[in-house]
Image (cartoon, rainbow, N blue to C red; front, top):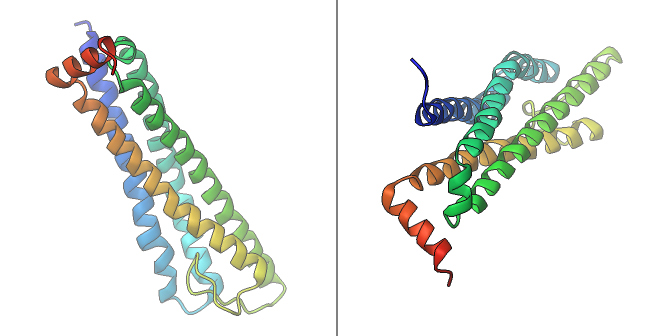
Length: 196
């Protein structure tokens, strides 16, 4: 049995949506659960270690979701080439969606880098015998060393940006899927043929 262009589109859409859901859901769980779970522990170093360990375990799965989103998005763009050319608005929303995906992937990588820096700095402080105080993995206290606090603020900001960008990618994808409806397609083509 040979797959048609419609079948290819459906598979790519499913892979894209599952990858995006994994990326979005995992990052929300991390921000709401993983980062905060360390606050139940008594030692600052343990608060950082537990979050770092959980994020390290989730990271490969998260990157599978991101990879699925990006690769399937590329396939959807390739399959929708005629629609991009003919249906007004489709290309601009598609470009915005691609931008949010790439920016979200970059933000994810930067958040991971911030987490690594926090972990390294915390371990160095531990080896020096310094008492490390933090509220949780991304929230410093007034007694948190300045450099660790700076990286925590960067990571917290970036970790909030990631689900916002992944969520925007999902919303824009939904808009594009609705653009495939017959009425939406006809309106888009007419708007292209009969400009304002």
